[in-house]
Amino acid sequence: MAAFGTVFTPEMSISRFTNNSWSAPELVASGSISLHPGAHVLHYSSTCFEGLKAFRHADGSIHLFRMDKNVARLAQSSELLSLPKIDGAMLSQMITDIVRRFATDVPNPPGSMYIRPTHIGTEASIGKAAAPSLESLLYVLLSPVGDYFSGGAKPLRLLLEDNARCASHMGMVKSGGNYASALQPIMKARAAVQADQVLFCPNGDVQETGAANFLLIDGNEIITKALDSSFLHGVTRDSILTLARDRGMTVSERELTVDELLERAAKPGAEAALSGTAAVLTPVGTLIHAGKEYQVGSGQGGSTTNALRQALNDIQWGKAADTHGWLTKV
Ligand code: PLP
Ligand code: COI
Image: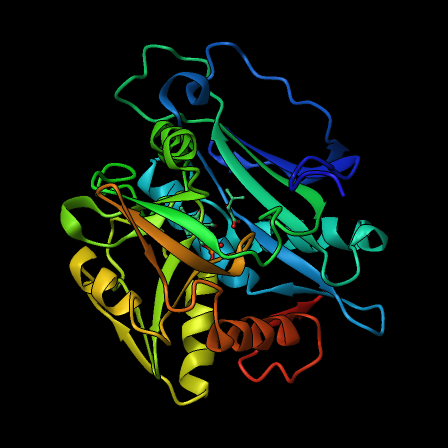
């Protein structure tokens, strides 16, 4: 199987914002876009994106998962980056139309169609270091995918990093700059301690990793940081917390310190996991902090993580009732 996100459908949907309005969406070849070298995005990082998936059910029908949430988040990211305002209805239609067009390319479970709506500032104006791009390009790319973590369900090793992933007011924006600023710590963690990911914990506050949210499971309680502007408000996080509540678990959205995490993770039944569209729910087996390694529970993941992942997948794959109305048939 090709690496996650390296295969694309031959066409994508695009709309351009110029003269204060969006052009009618059109399908174009996905192989390239043309940008002025002075485009705002290339200099001042006016870029944001989304990640959502479409799933194939046993009857062959194709379903988008929580598209409304991703459209709303791209609209919010665009606003916080001072990009032109997104037309949510138009974007939802672009997503639905392009997925419908490439419906036969949506893989069977456990694969899915990963959908990458992207919004970039295209105005050619290198003087606008402190001013927004008045022109932009919105496009929806499709990539048939399998597992994001190539180790499959192998529990991950996370290095706890004392610094922030990005500026504290930008964490909730799904913007390229945040990923760029996290890259050096991630590369160093891979080289130094063979960590799979970095768990960013500025001032001892457990936040998120470079591409997923973090959840601690201790018996009947699931603990994760309460929403604030410093980290991404994951759609998968919200879905898993909802499914945990459905199962009668106690959901604690609150501050989690590194000290409490290390203490509770060491308990025999403890579990930890990363949640994300790409990551789904991936178990964490080891936490690394200040030169020491801490095994999470058995170190092998656990039954609650597996059950929550299965409950999410069952809804996505049409094997369980969609009681929360999360699916949209294309
Ligand atoms: N945090 C970061 C930094 C991410 O890149 C992602 C992935 O999208 C998430 C969290 C999880 O968000 P979601 O569940 O909406 O995919
Ligand atoms: C996602 O889960 O959608 C992400 O954006 C994570 C990663 C592929 C960047």
